[in-house]
Length: 432
View 1 (cartoon, rainbow, N blue to C red):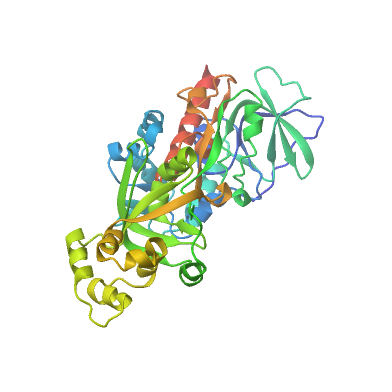
View 2 (cartoon, one colour):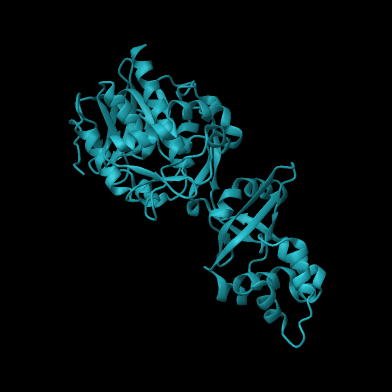
């Protein structure tokens, strides 16, 4: 990517809009502003933009989801009232239409998730950047790589109606004077891709309310860890066709069928991620969280009990479970792991464990390992257009805002929607 050079130090670097962060939220804001005829400069600390976006597409880029608007908005939990209007302004269908405008068609998978037809992120990002650099009309967006935002200038006096912000660059510290500033700096997960949460003290120092960043869509450590035998033989293996149920102390429930993976010290994967916010909050309040695992969700409890009680003759218990219930491998192993030898020898307790095996978690995995993060700039500190109430002309968008959602297209959709809203907010602010 071409490195745009700053003016000489003696010349004030004046821009209409400075966008800090080259992820989906920042790029969408840039597109809205560019289409409005504004001169837009995107600054990013990394050598290229969209790094986490590209990683998200490594196994197939899940852009959004096809479910109805009401169910979709419900994925944002307590933040639904704030996020829902943003989704209405930039909906899943709008996102698909936008991709098509760049020459990338999409399709709905069997689970309702929406993907590019080639499943890849790179072609979409390339087409997007091309459209930003060389729009059909107006001036293209200018990109400045390896520019790490370090906050507001303590030495330079902002020109009238502008924000003076500083960047650490390969050429040294630089000050930019912008009429409006869009911060789209990501959350705190995957620091190596640029989302390191270093912006938190910079905003907090300006009096902006920021909720602590926490892991979301994350794995967990089981209480006491797995035994050496289980870890050595089954770490990295999946639990397929199982169901997970959990009820927290407030009576909120989660119940879903799916898959997840055993790790060296715990669990991770799509089914765990879907319940991660409830599990994380329960651990925060009570020190641990216990979910119940149904190893055979397609069989009734009565059927399982009958098969467990069936006479096994000279066969071992492992052979009996495999023969009668096709229960073997990691599913059989976790029964021994969580129930213990005594319970395994009692048919009633064994049958109950197969249908509702208690698994206790003691901690989420570290933030930097999480797919996304919770916490961030409190939505209450922003206007509906995502402008910081106490700093007119400064807008925030993307994962750095205090919302969270499960995987399945909901994360990207909200990043696009908040970037779109921030871009429109800047246009309205500058016109006013």
